[in-house]
Image (cartoon, rainbow, N blue to C red; front, side, top):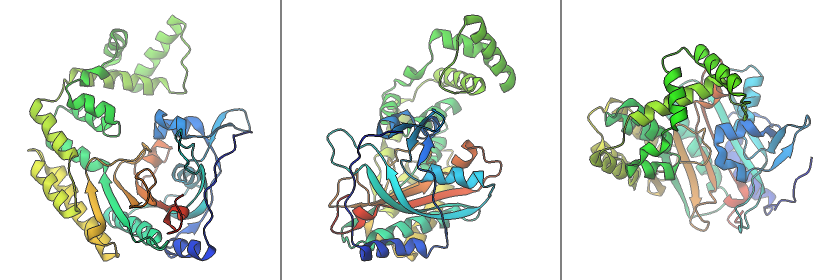
Length: 383
């Protein structure tokens, strides 16, 4: 196995590292580690193809493509499931690896300290606990210029549901949330750009309405007749499902001018959390049961953050805020320092309830985590 020389981050004093680590050690988590090598294909399926340029790709022991872990979330989730555990809370302290953007001096091998929690119970309270842990750890590094940026992938979904759009159109918008370019196309009335080709549309029409196993068998037969050997590791059933889904979405049409304006107004919300929630509530459409429930959950979440010591005047809720890793599907946050650019958060985390199922979990629990970058948290550091 060989990789290029990577840029290391600066070391920080041992006493500063101990202070930054202390809140996590007090959180009742089991110390663990996870393999540095992770399967490349799986990471790209989970986080999105756009992540490829940020990954250190290597050859695994059996010759398959692998990558150095870009963070700990997927690695620890896989380890948790492999152990047959249903619930668990894990503390980690180790190195992660990401290729820096071209022209950047960002460290490519860096230390992360954090917790991943797979637990049933009150997810709102767990969200508040994780963000407050990250805040306490970041603040222990000595910076006095921190702020907590909050967001929620599922809040966008609840808002879209409130508008009463055709289900395929709503689903298309939700998928576009983490893809700014695609979302802009939708808002500008060009959502049909996602429509499949004529050939794919005919195949989708053939598969529509068939049970998944039968649709997969038909697709496999078509490949055989055409002499096509599929690549990329995706199952026929998954490809058949996506073809039908995309054809349905294309037939769902596009947003009206008023609907597009409502979505733009939602995405523009960014304020102190209480004011932001009020603004979102005022924008909601007629089918607002899920949105009202989500907003009530957010008010409880904010109360939990304040009760755990996060200053209310340091928090901002930004409706358009998302994370690069595509497996986050709920609450999100970053702790930022005014001395560092927004691409260098001091701490981060969020909820990823859907990830265990995507990894093959038979039983479902909540899943949420947080991490801090000690070298960024330390008042004398930048990476």
